Length: 320
Ligand code: GLV
Image (cartoon, rainbow, N blue to C red; front, side, top):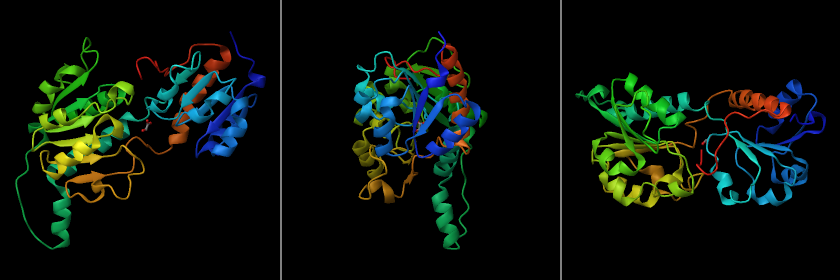
């Protein structure tokens, strides 16, 4: 059944709210788009919202969102809604999957190269005017393992394959082969997969059953010369155990884009560990992010207005 578009109100809770409002008004002059970039304006408008466009679902105002029927997340991970997932009832949840994979694969391959070549050492040597040639194994001799082969993990796998690497990966459903993956493991078989890897990339969704998914036992299965790259969420690995493993060189190093707490607290040892590259949750942030999300959102809004099925729907029971 088509929705009465004239009265439809969309609330945008995002730092780029004004930009989204402008894009929505240009393309959908018949709907009401309200910018609510901060908590005061969100609180003010949320009761009027039929649809909400936001990165994080504002669970703190959920009880006031009496009319809300659709939440379009501007990101891929919808972990923010899990605390109230039993209560969201008929709410449709969609995400922006599809816009992150390429730029995240760029990040991962940069990390693989920097860690493997020890570019930090080259840069230091350059600074010290030291000329220290050495041999480096080609990436084609190395194995990269992707934990979580969704849209993002699959793109990483194909990119690593195109660099000539052996690629292994784990996924909940292993019934369908994944392009670029030489060997597929069920997600419960990490103990078999991790010891094969020179690089372990975490690309699994954050959801209640993946909190601390990689704990001390799995970290111990990563070989001492291997590197870990996390572009998922900080919660999927037990950070204190990872720090211990990095400090004791039980694993060689890590590139981390996500952390248990963000921004990474000033007192975190990860800031200045010599074998860690830490970045501020940027791996999945391509330029023109707002326009990219808008193209998914606009397609969905069209569908919503016509009463058609939405795309990029998240199954909250599955978590992605
Ligand atoms: C970013 O981390 C996202 O989930 O899109």
